[in-house]
Image 1 (cartoon, rainbow, N blue to C red):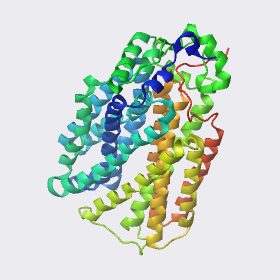
Image 2: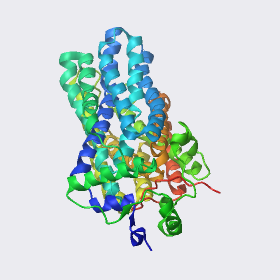
Image 3: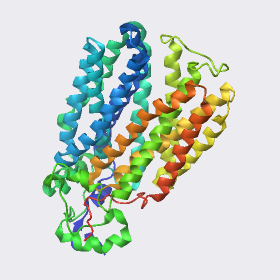
Amino acid sequence: MDEEDVGFYTLDKALESVGFGKFQGLVLAYAGLGWFAEAMEVMILSFIGEAVKSEWGLSSGQESLLSTVVFAGMLMGASSWGLVSDNYGRRKGFLSITVVTSGAGLLSTFSPNYLSLVIIRGFVGFGLGGGSVFLSWFLEFVPASNRGTWMIIFSTFWTFGSIFEASLAWIVMPRLKWRWLLAFSSVPSFLLLLLYGVVPESPRYLCMKGSTSDALQILDKIASVNQTKLPPGILACGRSSVEDKASALSEDRGPLLSSLSKNIMPSESGFSSFFMLFSPKLIQTTLLLWVLFFGNSFSYYGIILLTSKLSSGQSGCFPTIPSYRNFQDSAVYVDVFITSLAELPGLLLSAILVDRVGRKQSMAFMFVLTFILLLPLLTHQPAVLTTCLLFGARMCAIGTFNIASIYSPEIYPTPVRATGVGLASGMGRIGGMVCPLVAVGLVTECHQTEAVVLFLIAIVVSVVCIQLFPYETKGQELSDTMAISS
């Protein structure tokens, strides 16, 4: 028995009926631009540090702080923007995020001294912490049947943002220096701000808030733009008229369709969505996601930094590998450009796997491949083999990273989705901050084996966490309500 039998249809059935068309393409473009902008602002750290250090006579520690403060800002922003988005709407979250990111990004161009640059870049990082809101918002417009594939396509915006930033730095840095690179890199954030007026609210958020008529208006617009039709009947947003039927179906449809005897609305308290993450129903998922994102980021950034160390000759431990010591040499930009390309086949592989074998086993498989590719690096290898192994490891690591970014918003219900994903992303930022302090120091002191062992341990722990997740989300409808144990 189904809701359609009594003239009701769910939001997921509405999305399946209207399909993925031109409307979702526009949503993809806006959300993707958000990730493109974030990738550019993060990748810029690879290029301006040495230039600022040289111009202002900074120490290595001061140079490193420029990167650390951005990641610290992202850590604080990840949870903050998630709370704003879950309590006040995705659109209001976008407005706040883009104002902070674009304003601070441009303002950093005019920094008169080191301290002001550090402070302003910290605000840039705070704005960049809202990347998970773009992810959650796009997810809420995509039909369940091909959600994984489209989320992988969405993830390509990050890779292309990284590649574009390397190309932009290659052109700008030798001619116009670092201030102009900061200015040009803030342009995508300003575009997000300019396009804000045409951004629709998430129909899932509106349903969760009880604004069924507003949600239906957006669904009608999607159907009109896509030249399709909504199902016959009445849109049911998890309200009392269908709660009993939904609860009867929940055992057959899986945890994602679990309904409530009570609906908790985040508007009751600004921090209620935060505390929901630690309820008996979600605490296991929350903690496992934190460990997964930490381990994934630690190994992913470790592979990138290991590649940088082994190719730059900074440690002096690997004489067989070419050294590019001059920062202004174009080889630096070529190196970043080529290593970023490693992510494209990783995205393709994850796109092939994610909707066929599922999220959990896709992540586990690609983690295992990463583990195998890193194993030979426990001992020193020839330069060509080392490069190939690290290229393959980065390819697989970005695949697991992107599938985890799909799985995390799917496993959370709408009232806590952006907050939960934001906090998990924040734990990933901590992994990215810890990695240089631990792993790079080991490589610099010629302890390559110990550094690789740390990456392997992080991968093993992440695989164990994947197996402990309560359920698979492949093909499942998203949950719009928060279940509470009676």
